[in-house]
Amino acid sequence: MTDKKIQITARCPIRTTMELLGGKWKLLIIQQLRTGDKRSHELKELLPDISEKMLFQELKSLLESGLISKKTESKKPPKVVYSITIIGEKTYPLLKSMRDFALEYEAFIDHNI
Amino acid sequence: MTDKKIQITARCPIRTTMELLGGKWKLLIIQQLRTGDKRSHELKELLPDISEKMLFQELKSLLESGLISKKTESKKPPKVVYSITIIGEKTYPLLKSMRDFALEYEAFIDHNI
DNA sequence: AATTATACTTACCTTTTTGTTAGTATTGGC
DNA sequence: GCCAATACTAACAAAAAGGTAAGTATAATT
Image 1 (cartoon, each protein chain N blue to C red):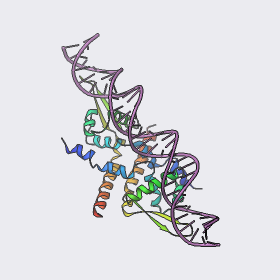
Image 2 (image 1 turned 90 degrees about the vertical axis):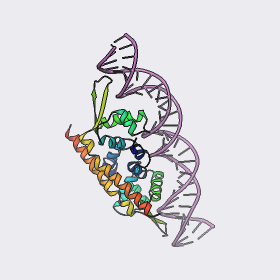
Image 3 (image 1 turned 45 degrees about the horizontal axis):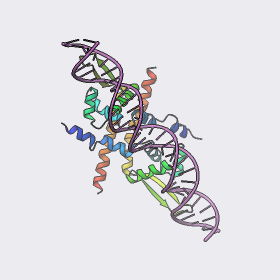
Image 4 (image 1 turned 90 degrees about the horizontal axis):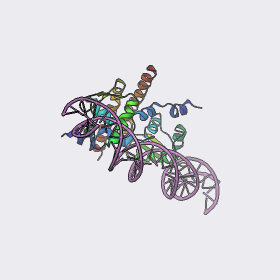
């Protein structure tokens, strides 16, 4: 009886990660920021089917968990730029694992047709 | 105009992986099967807060995508055992990345208190 | 202070996911 | 054919996630 149950329900790293990065958009936003800082409308162009609500909601969530940061420059029209933080960069191996898995999975499926 | 949009919306590996493994339970089920084949009620004990419906629904989904398999032995009471498949094992690096990320994240947070 | 351009929020609705409960299916031994 | 024991499903409800559309906020320039 089992620290196992406690491990799983209480503070399970898998669940922690899902809470921080789960949902349809957070990882896709991070993936885009990875190639360089972006403004909100740039992200919208790169993720054409995200709604404004979700974009800002998820940016806010990522800001609150510290995975991204934003810098506001008081320019002629205000200019806000989002960037990955150091902790945010720790998601890169996860992104790579997900990409690797998808490719291996698809190769396997194609092979067995 | 950008293969980028197509890449993201059409067949993006991140989305593929989320479709196969997303949701609250699939990865936790796989994680448990990793330590050895399990019967449904064993999984229920290891994941005490999963509902029967979700357990079987997610097992079904994982079976359909080929990530797990099941073997039915016609024993006195019928005995069904679930196992990871070869493709299912390809999720292990992803599980590890998620664990690693959660630990790094928590260490970072604790450090900055 | 009015304008313009970006950034963000809010109220409401739809869809998807997850949970509850009670039920059905199958099997070997009696 | 009935029993006990496991495996699974179906009907409905609740909650969470996501989408739409319209609105507010801000800030430098004029």
